[in-house]
Structures are given as C-alpha cells and as structure tokens.
Image 1 (cartoon, rainbow, N blue to C red):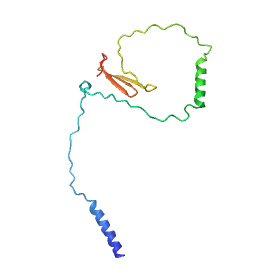
Image 2: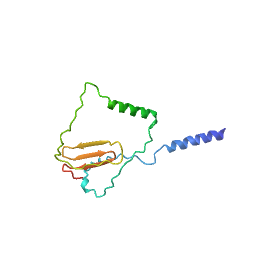
Image 3: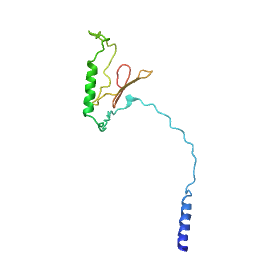
Image 4: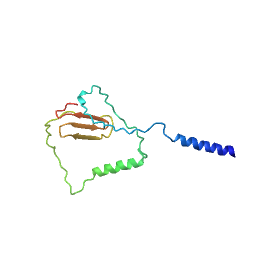
Amino acid sequence: MKYASFLLALALSLQALGQQSALPVRNVLQQPILPEQIHLKSIQQDFAPSVYSLEMPSPGAGTYRAYLLGLKDSLYRSYQPSGWKAMEGDASTPEVLAGFEGNLSGVSVPNDNDMAISNDGTIISVINSNMHVYDMSGNLL
C-alpha cells in the first residue's frame, strides 16, 4: 500500500512540474501586414485551373418520376390559355454597339454565370469554374 501511495504521489508531482513553463513568456507587439496591390498584367504564368464537380447523382434520377415530370412539362408547354394571343413574326435585329468575346463556357452544364463591373471599368466574368478579368476595351488582364 505504501508503494502504491508513493507512486501516486510521484505521478502527481511530476505532472505538476510538467505544467510549469520552461521558457519565459514574451509579449511582443508586431506591426500588421499591410495588403498589397496585385497587378494581373505582371503575372507571367497562366495555369488556367478548372474545377470539376464529382458529385454523386441525385437519388431517383432516371426513374419513372423523372419521366412523369418530363411529361408534365411537355403538356404545360402545349397548353395555351384562351385569353392569350400568340405573337407571330420576327423580333427586330439586335444591334451590337460594343462587344468582345468574353469568358467561354466549359463543359459543365448548366452554366453558372456571374459578372461584375467595377467603377473603374474592370470586368470580372465567371462561368462555372473559369474566371477572367477584362478591361473596358476587352483586353484580358
């Protein structure tokens, strides 16, 4: 019994000694890291990364329920209420005032498109996992 109490006292004392810090604590004030400006034209390497989603198909895809939803959609398109008149004829030809071929879509379907234009004329175009930055004249930055 004396041996067990000795081992218990030894373990507790070693644990208490282990809690003491071997190094003194120093408080040092450091200056914050200031944000840097990145000029995209200066970047030479273009890795053009593309992220592909490898999600599992949703449960029930390609089942009888999907067939019924497609049938319901086709019936909805063919139904035209009597109060509506069908417009026939062509729309006027659109006029392109200024344009450029922007961010082309990849192989992902459906496209998830977003576009932002800053006050200084920088255009950011995002389609799925592809992101391009342009200036107002259509030059890729």
